[in-house]
Length: 332
Image 1 (cartoon, rainbow, N blue to C red):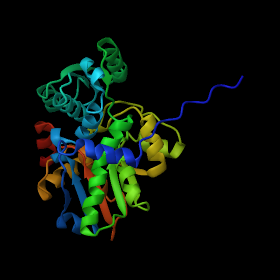
Image 2 (cartoon, rainbow, N blue to C red):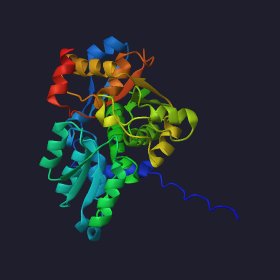
Image 3 (cartoon, rainbow, N blue to C red):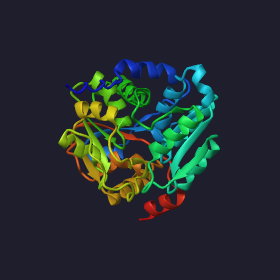
Image 4 (cartoon, rainbow, N blue to C red):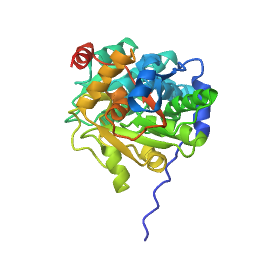
């Protein structure tokens, strides 16, 4: 007897991104798309950076979290929501849940930056800590959701989450179109792949020939290795980079299906290169960006891609960095 065929994966579409844009309008901040002459001169390119550091909760994660939680049917809201995150998704879910009148429990690694843990609690969520090297955060979250009758809000592998993140890409396209500019290249940091999948849906819908590149921390290049092998590859470890926001064990099922088709390529950046990019953003661009949020810029500054003469789009995806680490990086 033949084995049953696997269930088809429900992939979000550009229509879902458009619906998310309507849902989050007036709640999420329409963040600016910034151009800096000093960066253009340094790279010999025209570079536009989407400043999601200025988003509610300090990262793009609020977009997907609000799109997901505001879509929960009224009869399911009583049990609340459960999420797992190293910090940015945690804060996004905590804040979105409060705005939607829904209780939230967040499973966070015990070594997550103190600022992220404290801000998650300040947004009204209950925080449950775990050991990222020894425990499975998704399993802990699923158990809590089952016990409490809560809705699980995953950090990336969910059509509504991906569509919400895609609204950042939609705004990029609209702002560039208003300037009469067509982008050639996009660089997007990759963890589980939700931001990259959502933005890629939006960019490719309007600029089909744009070349999109994933950027990952050195030693945590599961997405790039997955592109090469054609299947989801795992990272050997779950800690050991300053890019705390970009440590996942492997790409998501849904996100990988989108990203292998729309992206399919990428580069890595070392912690040293990321640290220099944090310092560059502070000194030259007057922006505070966390290590995981600056990784696309780090790859550009390190010359990992040939962008001379091209129009480049990058995303500064988060600004939630511990003061101690930030001081160390900008002083180096």
